[in-house]
Image 1: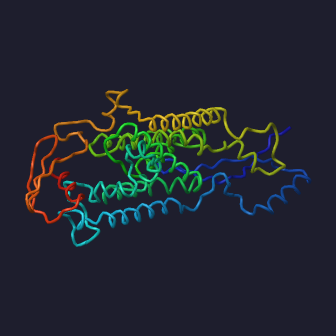
Image 2 (image 1 turned 135 degrees about the horizontal axis):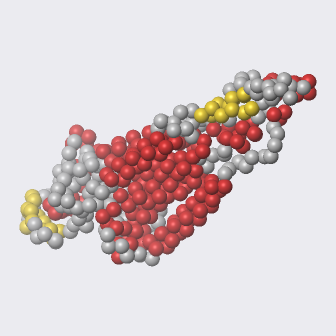
Length: 397
């Protein structure tokens, strides 16, 4: 029998990667020179599919609305926090005073241009003592929507828009929304198990979860991408740089690590794509389907899905139980604190809470740092507790 040329019907598939990975066009072979019966079947099929390029529902683009909504929510929460902070009333000095009630705390107290720690605590910042002793577990979630300052907010929201919109376009709002929230919870949980003397806020744990999910998505869907090695190297470098920034003081790298590991595992669960062989078979015309059915997912994808689901559920449960029992992981790991801050000659990693002893003589208030003995005298008229706490923080840090 003479060999005949087999034309191709092409399926248009949108590739999600902007890291050097182009769109992938995967062909489906179809017999030529059909019999009259096959010709009739083909005519009916083509009448339903007028274009030879069809966008597959498993790879379709979604309209991104959830990630922008998260950004708006974070901005609104920051504005509300600054309103509650009310620096002119609760602090002796403020900066950017033309903003009135929304002016920022002194730079020495908060270098990120934002509210006081007491205002963040009122709004739902992660405070381990309140979670454990007062059973306020909701702080593990609410802290994700708060930010320590304007600079903190801008950095996180820019990262969220760049990473999150692309993921939502590719996988939809349900999967990316769940991934974001659960990763943020995982970051808060690890942070609470290590950093128990300070409050913690920020969406960076959830953002790192999206980064981790991008990495696991590339691994689990390895066979369907072109230029995969270049994409993998680029993504690993980006992640490494961001984690390296976390060793600086006043940056909660435990939230980054917890969010990243949670997102990495969840990526295998939420972002697994069907293989092209199965997709091609499913979307090919009936007259061209022959041979054994191809599986929707490869074996290694199923194994990663099961293992990741077990690890993330077990890790969350064990971590939450340990936290509620008052476990401090620093007691079991003497070097782990270096993962969040590495002390150098230029900065200190001591972020322990400061306290002062106050003495009053008429309108003169003398504050003395409990640890260092450093003191300062201030002329104040009927100061409130927040004002004295802010002065103590500026004096002793």
